[in-house]
Length: 514
Image (cartoon, rainbow, N blue to C red):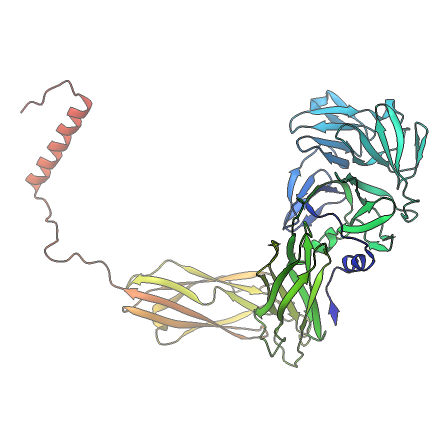
Protein backbone atom coordinates (compact mmCIF):
# COMPACT_ATOMS: atom_id res chain seq x y z
CA UNK A 1 0.00 0.00 0.00
CA UNK A 2 1.31 3.39 -0.94
CA UNK A 3 0.77 6.00 1.74
CA UNK A 4 0.55 9.57 0.53
CA UNK A 5 0.26 11.58 3.71
CA UNK A 6 1.92 14.19 5.82
CA UNK A 7 3.83 11.87 8.09
CA UNK A 8 5.24 14.62 10.24
CA UNK A 9 1.80 16.11 10.74
CA UNK A 10 0.28 12.80 11.79
CA UNK A 11 3.09 11.98 14.20
CA UNK A 12 2.88 15.44 15.70
CA UNK A 13 -0.78 14.84 16.44
CA UNK A 14 0.07 11.56 18.14
CA UNK A 15 2.41 13.30 20.60
CA UNK A 16 0.69 16.68 20.85
CA UNK A 17 -0.88 17.77 24.11
CA UNK A 18 -3.00 20.46 22.46
CA UNK A 19 -3.65 21.89 19.02
CA UNK A 20 -1.34 24.51 17.61
CA UNK A 21 -2.65 28.06 17.27
CA UNK A 22 -4.78 28.41 14.15
CA UNK A 23 -3.04 30.48 11.46
CA UNK A 24 -4.74 32.39 8.67
CA UNK A 25 -1.60 33.50 6.80
CA UNK A 26 2.19 33.49 6.90
CA UNK A 27 4.91 35.56 5.30
CA UNK A 28 8.30 34.03 4.74
CA UNK A 29 11.45 34.10 2.67
CA UNK A 30 13.34 31.03 1.47
CA UNK A 31 17.05 30.31 1.24
CA UNK A 32 16.79 28.97 -2.33
CA UNK A 33 14.56 29.72 -5.29
CA UNK A 34 11.51 27.48 -5.24
CA UNK A 35 8.28 27.22 -7.27
CA UNK A 36 5.28 27.14 -4.94
CA UNK A 37 2.17 26.30 -6.91
CA UNK A 38 3.25 28.52 -9.82
CA UNK A 39 4.65 31.38 -7.72
CA UNK A 40 8.44 31.59 -7.81
CA UNK A 41 9.83 32.59 -4.42
CA UNK A 42 13.50 33.56 -4.36
CA UNK A 43 15.87 34.55 -1.51
CA UNK A 44 15.42 38.25 -2.38
CA UNK A 45 11.63 38.10 -1.99
CA UNK A 46 9.00 37.57 0.70
CA UNK A 47 6.02 35.28 0.03
CA UNK A 48 2.53 35.89 1.39
CA UNK A 49 0.90 32.49 2.02
CA UNK A 50 -2.81 32.53 2.93
CA UNK A 51 -2.82 28.73 3.38
CA UNK A 52 -5.46 28.30 0.69
CA UNK A 53 -3.51 27.96 -2.55
CA UNK A 54 -0.40 29.31 -4.20
CA UNK A 55 1.23 32.22 -2.31
CA UNK A 56 1.68 35.70 -3.71
CA UNK A 57 4.74 37.92 -3.35
CA UNK A 58 4.61 40.56 -0.64
CA UNK A 59 8.10 41.79 -1.63
CA UNK A 60 10.31 40.94 -4.59
CA UNK A 61 13.49 42.18 -6.20
CA UNK A 62 15.02 43.29 -2.91
CA UNK A 63 18.61 44.61 -3.01
CA UNK A 64 19.92 41.51 -1.25
CA UNK A 65 18.95 38.09 0.05
CA UNK A 66 16.78 38.14 3.15
CA UNK A 67 18.38 36.77 6.32
CA UNK A 68 15.54 37.69 8.71
CA UNK A 69 12.11 39.32 8.41
CA UNK A 70 9.36 40.84 10.55
CA UNK A 71 6.18 42.70 9.58
CA UNK A 72 4.41 45.28 11.71
CA UNK A 73 1.26 45.26 9.60
CA UNK A 74 2.35 48.25 7.56
CA UNK A 75 6.16 48.33 7.59
CA UNK A 76 8.63 45.54 6.80
CA UNK A 77 11.69 44.92 8.97
CA UNK A 78 14.55 43.30 7.09
CA UNK A 79 18.02 41.92 7.71
CA UNK A 80 20.11 41.12 4.61
CA UNK A 81 22.71 38.36 4.55
CA UNK A 82 25.34 40.62 2.96
CA UNK A 83 26.19 44.28 3.23
CA UNK A 84 23.84 46.19 0.91
CA UNK A 85 23.59 49.74 -0.39
CA UNK A 86 20.14 51.28 -0.02
CA UNK A 87 18.28 54.45 -1.02
CA UNK A 88 20.52 55.12 -3.99
CA UNK A 89 23.71 54.66 -1.99
CA UNK A 90 22.84 56.94 0.91
CA UNK A 91 22.40 54.08 3.40
CA UNK A 92 24.53 50.99 3.99
CA UNK A 93 23.22 48.04 6.02
CA UNK A 94 25.24 45.06 7.26
CA UNK A 95 24.00 41.59 8.28
CA UNK A 96 24.05 42.91 11.86
CA UNK A 97 21.60 45.74 11.14
CA UNK A 98 17.81 45.91 10.94
CA UNK A 99 16.20 48.25 8.41
CA UNK A 100 12.55 49.13 8.00
CA UNK A 101 10.99 49.43 4.55
CA UNK A 102 7.71 51.17 3.78
CA UNK A 103 7.64 50.22 0.13
CA UNK A 104 9.68 53.24 -0.94
CA UNK A 105 12.39 54.11 1.58
CA UNK A 106 14.71 52.12 3.84
CA UNK A 107 15.50 53.35 7.37
CA UNK A 108 18.01 51.78 9.74
CA UNK A 109 16.22 51.05 13.04
CA UNK A 110 18.91 48.94 14.72
CA UNK A 111 22.69 49.12 14.35
CA UNK A 112 24.33 45.88 15.39
CA UNK A 113 27.95 47.02 15.68
CA UNK A 114 27.20 49.83 18.11
CA UNK A 115 24.72 47.67 20.05
CA UNK A 116 27.23 44.98 20.92
CA UNK A 117 26.85 42.30 18.25
CA UNK A 118 30.36 40.92 17.70
CA UNK A 119 32.00 41.11 14.28
CA UNK A 120 31.30 38.09 12.09
CA UNK A 121 27.93 37.26 13.64
CA UNK A 122 24.79 37.59 11.53
CA UNK A 123 21.20 38.06 12.61
CA UNK A 124 19.32 35.14 11.06
CA UNK A 125 15.98 35.28 12.93
CA UNK A 126 14.00 38.35 13.91
CA UNK A 127 10.76 39.16 15.73
CA UNK A 128 9.41 41.52 18.38
CA UNK A 129 7.23 41.37 21.47
CA UNK A 130 5.61 44.79 21.04
CA UNK A 131 6.67 46.18 17.67
CA UNK A 132 9.44 48.31 19.15
CA UNK A 133 11.91 45.92 20.82
CA UNK A 134 13.83 43.15 19.02
CA UNK A 135 14.01 39.37 19.38
CA UNK A 136 17.09 37.93 17.69
CA UNK A 137 18.76 34.63 16.97
CA UNK A 138 22.25 34.49 15.47
CA UNK A 139 23.95 32.15 13.02
CA UNK A 140 26.74 31.39 15.48
CA UNK A 141 27.32 31.38 19.22
CA UNK A 142 27.71 34.95 20.50
CA UNK A 143 27.90 36.99 23.67
CA UNK A 144 25.85 40.20 23.57
CA UNK A 145 25.99 42.37 26.61
CA UNK A 146 26.32 39.83 29.39
CA UNK A 147 24.18 37.22 27.60
CA UNK A 148 25.69 34.17 25.91
CA UNK A 149 23.53 32.73 23.14
CA UNK A 150 23.81 29.65 20.92
CA UNK A 151 22.39 29.49 17.35
CA UNK A 152 19.20 27.82 18.71
CA UNK A 153 18.61 30.52 21.34
CA UNK A 154 16.63 33.78 21.26
CA UNK A 155 17.75 37.02 22.93
CA UNK A 156 15.88 40.26 23.45
CA UNK A 157 17.19 43.78 22.90
CA UNK A 158 15.10 46.52 24.51
CA UNK A 159 16.05 49.97 25.71
CA UNK A 160 19.73 49.33 25.10
CA UNK A 161 19.74 46.17 27.24
CA UNK A 162 20.24 42.55 26.23
CA UNK A 163 18.42 39.66 27.98
CA UNK A 164 17.87 35.96 27.38
CA UNK A 165 14.43 35.17 25.98
CA UNK A 166 14.52 31.50 24.93
CA UNK A 167 17.16 28.82 25.57
CA UNK A 168 16.85 26.09 22.98
CA UNK A 169 18.79 23.41 24.82
CA UNK A 170 16.63 23.75 27.93
CA UNK A 171 13.50 23.47 25.79
CA UNK A 172 14.68 20.27 24.09
CA UNK A 173 15.94 21.64 20.77
CA UNK A 174 18.32 19.02 19.33
CA UNK A 175 22.03 19.81 19.23
CA UNK A 176 23.17 21.25 15.91
CA UNK A 177 19.83 22.85 15.09
CA UNK A 178 20.15 26.44 13.92
CA UNK A 179 17.10 28.66 14.43
CA UNK A 180 16.56 30.13 10.96
CA UNK A 181 13.18 31.85 11.33
CA UNK A 182 11.23 33.19 14.29
CA UNK A 183 7.90 34.85 15.05
CA UNK A 184 6.26 35.65 18.38
CA UNK A 185 2.47 35.32 18.33
CA UNK A 186 0.33 37.76 20.28
CA UNK A 187 -0.46 34.97 22.78
CA UNK A 188 3.25 34.76 23.61
CA UNK A 189 3.86 31.48 21.81
CA UNK A 190 6.91 31.28 19.53
CA UNK A 191 6.85 30.01 15.96
CA UNK A 192 10.26 28.64 14.97
CA UNK A 193 11.85 27.01 11.96
CA UNK A 194 15.17 25.16 12.03
CA UNK A 195 17.67 24.31 9.31
CA UNK A 196 17.74 20.56 10.00
CA UNK A 197 15.19 17.79 10.45
CA UNK A 198 14.75 16.26 13.89
CA UNK A 199 12.34 15.93 16.78
CA UNK A 200 11.60 18.10 19.78
CA UNK A 201 9.21 17.36 22.63
CA UNK A 202 8.21 14.16 20.86
CA UNK A 203 7.23 16.09 17.72
CA UNK A 204 9.16 15.22 14.53
CA UNK A 205 9.82 18.02 12.08
CA UNK A 206 11.52 18.60 8.76
CA UNK A 207 13.94 21.36 7.79
CA UNK A 208 11.77 24.36 6.97
CA UNK A 209 8.77 23.19 9.02
CA UNK A 210 7.24 25.71 11.42
CA UNK A 211 6.96 24.59 15.06
CA UNK A 212 4.99 26.31 17.81
CA UNK A 213 6.57 26.50 21.28
CA UNK A 214 4.55 27.16 24.42
CA UNK A 215 6.48 27.61 27.66
CA UNK A 216 7.68 25.77 29.56
CA UNK A 217 8.22 22.87 27.16
CA UNK A 218 5.28 22.15 24.82
CA UNK A 219 5.82 21.78 21.07
CA UNK A 220 3.42 21.45 18.13
CA UNK A 221 3.85 21.27 14.38
CA UNK A 222 2.15 24.47 13.16
CA UNK A 223 2.84 24.37 9.42
CA UNK A 224 4.69 22.10 6.99
CA UNK A 225 5.29 23.81 3.61
CA UNK A 226 6.82 20.63 2.16
CA UNK A 227 3.50 18.85 2.74
CA UNK A 228 1.61 21.52 0.80
CA UNK A 229 4.00 22.25 -2.07
CA UNK A 230 5.47 19.25 -3.95
CA UNK A 231 8.37 21.37 -5.24
CA UNK A 232 9.43 22.67 -1.81
CA UNK A 233 12.36 20.22 -1.83
CA UNK A 234 15.41 21.43 0.09
CA UNK A 235 14.12 24.95 0.76
CA UNK A 236 14.45 26.35 4.29
CA UNK A 237 12.82 29.43 5.77
CA UNK A 238 14.95 32.55 6.22
CA UNK A 239 12.31 34.91 7.60
CA UNK A 240 8.88 34.39 9.16
CA UNK A 241 5.79 36.35 10.12
CA UNK A 242 2.35 34.91 10.85
CA UNK A 243 -1.22 35.99 11.33
CA UNK A 244 -3.26 34.01 13.84
CA UNK A 245 -6.78 33.06 12.79
CA UNK A 246 -9.63 34.97 14.39
CA UNK A 247 -10.83 33.37 17.64
CA UNK A 248 -13.38 30.70 16.90
CA UNK A 249 -12.23 30.11 13.33
CA UNK A 250 -13.33 26.68 12.16
CA UNK A 251 -10.48 26.38 9.66
CA UNK A 252 -9.98 25.47 6.02
CA UNK A 253 -10.32 21.89 4.81
CA UNK A 254 -8.39 20.86 1.72
CA UNK A 255 -6.41 18.14 0.00
CA UNK A 256 -2.77 18.12 1.06
CA UNK A 257 -1.77 17.91 -2.64
CA UNK A 258 -3.47 18.79 -5.91
CA UNK A 259 -1.89 15.83 -7.71
CA UNK A 260 -1.38 12.36 -6.24
CA UNK A 261 0.21 9.34 -7.90
CA UNK A 262 0.11 5.58 -7.32
CA UNK A 263 1.41 2.59 -9.23
CA UNK A 264 -1.14 0.13 -10.57
CA UNK A 265 0.42 -2.60 -8.43
CA UNK A 266 0.33 -0.65 -5.13
CA UNK A 267 -3.02 -2.11 -4.14
CA UNK A 268 -4.30 1.14 -2.66
CA UNK A 269 -3.44 4.77 -2.10
CA UNK A 270 -4.11 6.94 0.95
CA UNK A 271 -5.27 10.53 0.39
CA UNK A 272 -4.75 13.20 3.06
CA UNK A 273 -7.08 16.10 3.92
CA UNK A 274 -5.77 18.89 6.17
CA UNK A 275 -7.41 21.41 8.49
CA UNK A 276 -5.58 24.75 8.70
CA UNK A 277 -6.34 28.32 9.76
CA UNK A 278 -8.32 27.35 12.88
CA UNK A 279 -9.74 24.39 14.77
CA UNK A 280 -12.69 25.79 16.69
CA UNK A 281 -15.77 23.58 16.72
CA UNK A 282 -16.53 20.19 15.23
CA UNK A 283 -16.42 20.12 11.43
CA UNK A 284 -16.96 17.55 8.67
CA UNK A 285 -16.45 17.33 4.92
CA UNK A 286 -17.67 14.83 2.32
CA UNK A 287 -15.21 13.18 -0.06
CA UNK A 288 -15.82 11.22 -3.27
CA UNK A 289 -14.01 9.79 -6.27
CA UNK A 290 -15.11 10.01 -9.91
CA UNK A 291 -13.88 8.64 -13.21
CA UNK A 292 -11.31 10.65 -15.09
CA UNK A 293 -9.75 8.44 -17.71
CA UNK A 294 -9.74 5.54 -15.21
CA UNK A 295 -12.89 3.44 -14.78
CA UNK A 296 -14.38 2.52 -11.41
CA UNK A 297 -14.62 -1.23 -11.03
CA UNK A 298 -11.86 -1.89 -13.57
CA UNK A 299 -9.02 0.37 -12.49
CA UNK A 300 -10.03 1.37 -8.96
CA UNK A 301 -12.88 1.00 -6.48
CA UNK A 302 -15.09 3.99 -5.77
CA UNK A 303 -14.41 5.64 -2.42
CA UNK A 304 -16.87 8.00 -0.76
CA UNK A 305 -17.57 9.09 2.80
CA UNK A 306 -17.23 11.80 5.44
CA UNK A 307 -14.18 12.99 7.38
CA UNK A 308 -14.73 14.45 10.86
CA UNK A 309 -12.78 16.68 13.25
CA UNK A 310 -13.60 17.45 16.90
CA UNK A 311 -13.22 20.96 18.27
CA UNK A 312 -9.54 21.73 18.76
CA UNK A 313 -8.50 18.91 16.43
CA UNK A 314 -6.22 20.11 13.62
CA UNK A 315 -4.86 16.67 12.70
CA UNK A 316 -4.82 15.56 9.09
CA UNK A 317 -7.43 12.94 8.15
CA UNK A 318 -7.13 10.31 5.44
CA UNK A 319 -9.19 8.02 3.24
CA UNK A 320 -8.12 5.08 1.09
CA UNK A 321 -8.79 4.27 -2.57
CA UNK A 322 -8.28 0.61 -3.59
CA UNK A 323 -6.33 0.23 -6.86
CA UNK A 324 -7.06 -2.70 -9.20
CA UNK A 325 -4.37 -4.43 -11.27
CA UNK A 326 -4.81 -5.87 -14.77
CA UNK A 327 -2.56 -7.11 -17.54
CA UNK A 328 -3.77 -4.55 -20.09
CA UNK A 329 -1.47 -1.95 -21.60
CA UNK A 330 -3.68 1.11 -21.11
CA UNK A 331 -1.33 3.95 -20.31
CA UNK A 332 -1.56 6.15 -17.20
CA UNK A 333 -5.13 6.86 -16.08
CA UNK A 334 -6.67 9.41 -13.75
CA UNK A 335 -9.21 9.46 -10.93
CA UNK A 336 -10.91 12.72 -9.92
CA UNK A 337 -11.08 13.56 -6.20
CA UNK A 338 -13.57 16.02 -4.71
CA UNK A 339 -14.38 17.57 -1.34
CA UNK A 340 -17.89 18.97 -0.82
CA UNK A 341 -20.41 20.00 1.84
CA UNK A 342 -18.20 21.29 4.70
CA UNK A 343 -20.00 21.76 8.03
CA UNK A 344 -19.37 23.60 11.29
CA UNK A 345 -18.37 26.84 9.56
CA UNK A 346 -15.30 25.35 7.87
CA UNK A 347 -14.33 26.57 4.41
CA UNK A 348 -12.89 24.65 1.49
CA UNK A 349 -9.41 25.27 0.13
CA UNK A 350 -8.08 22.91 -2.55
CA UNK A 351 -11.29 20.89 -3.00
CA UNK A 352 -10.45 19.17 -6.31
CA UNK A 353 -7.44 16.95 -6.90
CA UNK A 354 -6.31 14.25 -9.33
CA UNK A 355 -4.95 10.78 -8.69
CA UNK A 356 -2.82 9.34 -11.52
CA UNK A 357 -2.63 5.55 -11.68
CA UNK A 358 0.65 4.63 -13.36
CA UNK A 359 0.27 1.69 -15.76
CA UNK A 360 2.55 -1.16 -14.64
CA UNK A 361 2.43 -2.81 -18.08
CA UNK A 362 3.90 -0.05 -20.19
CA UNK A 363 7.21 -0.96 -21.83
CA UNK A 364 9.99 1.61 -21.74
CA UNK A 365 9.68 4.59 -24.12
CA UNK A 366 5.96 4.11 -24.78
CA UNK A 367 3.96 7.02 -26.25
CA UNK A 368 0.42 7.73 -25.10
CA UNK A 369 -1.90 10.27 -26.72
CA UNK A 370 -4.83 12.39 -25.57
CA UNK A 371 -6.95 14.84 -27.57
CA UNK A 372 -8.56 18.09 -26.45
CA UNK A 373 -11.28 19.08 -26.95
CA UNK A 374 -13.16 15.87 -27.48
CA UNK A 375 -15.89 16.19 -28.67
CA UNK A 376 -15.32 19.22 -30.89
CA UNK A 377 -18.55 21.16 -31.54
CA UNK A 378 -18.59 23.89 -34.21
CA UNK A 379 -22.01 25.20 -33.17
CA UNK A 380 -24.32 26.77 -35.77
CA UNK A 381 -22.94 27.45 -39.24
CA UNK A 382 -24.59 28.74 -42.44
CA UNK A 383 -24.97 25.98 -45.00
CA UNK A 384 -22.40 25.94 -47.81
CA UNK A 385 -20.23 28.46 -45.91
CA UNK A 386 -17.00 27.27 -44.29
CA UNK A 387 -16.51 27.98 -40.60
CA UNK A 388 -13.36 29.34 -39.04
CA UNK A 389 -10.66 26.83 -38.14
CA UNK A 390 -11.07 24.96 -34.84
CA UNK A 391 -8.04 23.17 -33.35
CA UNK A 392 -7.65 19.79 -31.72
CA UNK A 393 -4.56 19.57 -29.49
CA UNK A 394 -2.86 16.18 -29.28
CA UNK A 395 -0.66 15.65 -26.21
CA UNK A 396 1.90 12.90 -25.79
CA UNK A 397 1.51 11.88 -22.14
CA UNK A 398 3.73 8.81 -22.51
CA UNK A 399 7.45 8.21 -22.17
CA UNK A 400 8.44 7.76 -25.84
CA UNK A 401 8.14 9.78 -29.06
CA UNK A 402 4.65 9.81 -30.61
CA UNK A 403 4.24 9.35 -34.37
CA UNK A 404 0.86 10.20 -35.90
CA UNK A 405 0.41 7.93 -38.93
CA UNK A 406 -3.07 8.84 -40.20
CA UNK A 407 -6.10 11.09 -39.78
CA UNK A 408 -9.35 9.74 -41.27
CA UNK A 409 -12.74 11.47 -41.34
CA UNK A 410 -15.70 9.13 -41.06
CA UNK A 411 -19.40 9.06 -40.33
CA UNK A 412 -22.56 10.03 -42.19
CA UNK A 413 -21.57 13.67 -42.66
CA UNK A 414 -17.80 13.34 -42.93
CA UNK A 415 -17.91 15.43 -46.12
CA UNK A 416 -19.02 18.46 -44.11
CA UNK A 417 -15.74 18.53 -42.19
CA UNK A 418 -12.23 19.14 -43.54
CA UNK A 419 -8.74 18.83 -42.08
CA UNK A 420 -7.05 22.08 -43.11
CA UNK A 421 -3.96 22.14 -40.85
CA UNK A 422 -1.71 19.46 -39.40
CA UNK A 423 1.43 20.06 -37.33
CA UNK A 424 1.66 16.40 -36.32
CA UNK A 425 3.88 15.29 -39.18
CA UNK A 426 7.04 15.08 -37.09
CA UNK A 427 7.58 12.96 -33.98
CA UNK A 428 5.98 14.46 -30.88
CA UNK A 429 8.28 14.25 -27.84
CA UNK A 430 6.99 13.12 -24.40
CA UNK A 431 5.03 15.97 -22.83
CA UNK A 432 4.84 17.89 -26.14
CA UNK A 433 1.79 18.70 -28.27
CA UNK A 434 0.80 19.06 -31.92
CA UNK A 435 -2.29 20.55 -33.58
CA UNK A 436 -4.94 19.40 -36.06
CA UNK A 437 -7.07 22.22 -37.57
CA UNK A 438 -10.56 21.52 -38.97
CA UNK A 439 -13.38 23.48 -40.60
CA UNK A 440 -17.11 22.79 -40.89
CA UNK A 441 -19.13 23.46 -44.09
CA UNK A 442 -22.62 22.04 -43.61
CA UNK A 443 -24.28 20.76 -46.78
CA UNK A 444 -27.76 20.94 -45.27
CA UNK A 445 -29.61 22.22 -42.22
CA UNK A 446 -29.82 20.33 -38.95
CA UNK A 447 -27.39 18.42 -36.81
CA UNK A 448 -24.31 17.12 -38.63
CA UNK A 449 -21.87 14.71 -36.99
CA UNK A 450 -18.70 12.88 -37.96
CA UNK A 451 -15.59 11.35 -36.45
CA UNK A 452 -11.89 11.96 -36.82
CA UNK A 453 -9.88 8.78 -36.25
CA UNK A 454 -6.24 9.45 -35.42
CA UNK A 455 -3.88 6.55 -36.05
CA UNK A 456 -0.53 6.53 -34.24
CA UNK A 457 2.00 4.31 -32.52
CA UNK A 458 0.56 5.21 -29.11
CA UNK A 459 -0.76 2.58 -26.72
CA UNK A 460 -4.30 3.36 -27.87
CA UNK A 461 -3.25 3.49 -31.52
CA UNK A 462 -6.70 4.50 -32.74
CA UNK A 463 -7.98 7.64 -31.02
CA UNK A 464 -11.45 8.86 -32.09
CA UNK A 465 -12.53 12.49 -31.78
CA UNK A 466 -16.26 13.16 -32.21
CA UNK A 467 -17.15 16.13 -34.42
CA UNK A 468 -20.46 18.00 -34.40
CA UNK A 469 -22.13 21.08 -35.85
CA UNK A 470 -25.50 22.43 -36.91
CA UNK A 471 -26.33 23.70 -40.38
CA UNK A 472 -28.57 26.77 -40.59
CA UNK A 473 -29.89 28.82 -43.49
CA UNK A 474 -28.71 32.36 -44.17
CA UNK A 475 -31.04 35.16 -42.96
CA UNK A 476 -33.61 36.07 -45.65
CA UNK A 477 -35.48 39.37 -45.92
CA UNK A 478 -39.16 38.47 -46.39
CA UNK A 479 -41.38 40.01 -49.07
CA UNK A 480 -43.21 43.12 -47.94
CA UNK A 481 -40.45 44.13 -45.60
CA UNK A 482 -37.84 44.81 -48.27
CA UNK A 483 -36.52 48.35 -48.28
CA UNK A 484 -36.42 49.67 -51.90
CA UNK A 485 -33.06 50.85 -53.24
CA UNK A 486 -33.07 54.69 -53.78
CA UNK A 487 -32.82 56.05 -57.31
CA UNK A 488 -29.99 58.43 -58.36
CA UNK A 489 -32.18 61.52 -57.88
CA UNK A 490 -33.28 60.22 -54.47
CA UNK A 491 -29.64 59.66 -53.49
CA UNK A 492 -28.87 63.27 -54.53
CA UNK A 493 -31.66 64.61 -52.32
CA UNK A 494 -30.49 62.48 -49.37
CA UNK A 495 -26.92 63.75 -49.74
CA UNK A 496 -28.02 67.40 -50.10
CA UNK A 497 -30.19 67.19 -46.97
CA UNK A 498 -27.32 65.69 -45.07
CA UNK A 499 -24.95 68.49 -46.17
CA UNK A 500 -27.46 71.21 -45.22
CA UNK A 501 -28.05 69.58 -41.83
CA UNK A 502 -24.32 69.57 -41.10
CA UNK A 503 -23.99 73.20 -42.21
CA UNK A 504 -26.76 74.30 -39.84
CA UNK A 505 -25.16 72.31 -37.03
CA UNK A 506 -21.70 73.83 -37.45
CA UNK A 507 -22.87 77.38 -38.47
CA UNK A 508 -26.03 77.96 -36.44
CA UNK A 509 -25.99 81.74 -37.01
CA UNK A 510 -26.48 81.43 -40.78
CA UNK A 511 -29.88 80.98 -42.30
CA UNK A 512 -30.62 78.30 -44.81
CA UNK A 513 -31.00 79.71 -48.32
CA UNK A 514 -33.06 77.91 -50.92
